[in-house]
Image (cartoon, rainbow, N blue to C red; front, side, top):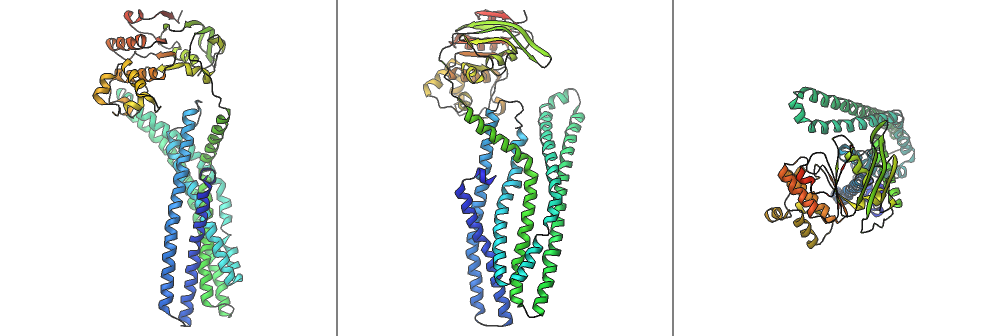
Length: 527
């Protein structure tokens, strides 16, 4: 992960700092040997030896602080890169099965930080620390160092046994955690319904059931990983400490090794054992994150492929006509609509009427290219356009029954972050009937979650201003006024039908006769 999503110079600097930091262990072991040698044979100055030790530790302390800075900077950079990648995928991938939800953007990406990014950085530092300790120990006594070194790899047996099980349990937990998050969202959305029908207990039980499945899977993952780590540590103590110590003491007793040298190697040997154990624990952590890493790799591949395939479309500024001939859409065995024929010319204000459930929203999805006709023809400006999202959607602005409002400023909700001129913005605000609101609240006014700080009509006008600002030739309105009262519905219709110079296509199943009279063409889809 860190190689793919961090700048190379940062990784190089991190490796260099990790190397300098690893020398602290060698320095401490060397000073430890000198103190023992001094205790056995006092020569030189103990004060100077102590001062040398303190000064060296201070220098290594500074190195350690710089090392920690870059350690957390790399984590920050990878986290931001992954969030940018997944956000880009979330917004640009129109597939309903994109495997990205709130759980992935929060819990799963946090798992990547804990169990992959940090684990990979730890493997690098532990490996460097291990190599520095091994080289230093071999210089002092290669025989005792070799004993400690061989013993350090015995814990690998435990890791090879538990590794596949940890990975399997982790994948199960990742799936159940995603389901739990979906259940939380559904429960939150269904609070009002639960209270109306007095099914609070049932909804809570459903949520707790999902939580129990998720927590049980997490327990199994953590328990397997914890048991593996404990057994690894136990084996490490037996084979990497007690047995090598017995051999070393035998060398001292027989006069082949001094106590100071043996204690120095023992000190260094801790950095055979601890890094090796740490490396295997880090590999276990990475195994728990593998399902999420696999998902990120698929996202990364998709985004790179889609960017390579992306072709800029030259959308003309003018719209002449669109025509549906014998249009049919089905989903599986269910027929949504069939035998639909429409012809709409530039500048026309068209009302499409049909009862609820007919498939009006599906028809609008066909017009903008989100859905494709199963049979029939869809032509725009005399050219076949069926399912051509990349070309079609550039012709349309959209006003929905429930306005899409972000918890952000009034200006951002109108522009959606696009750079627009002040004149164009003010023109859209005026034509959408938002002048009084802007004068009262200002463009920096925060609208709240789902636009809770404004009325329904004001939120609807924001969508209208957004559509007018885009200056696309066709305005689609999907039940845009069905949730508003008659007076407000009339005001909205006057705005979109009188203040928009292009083509308007509205689908609705309940509007007044006065509003109907404002349209050029009324088509009853049910007939």
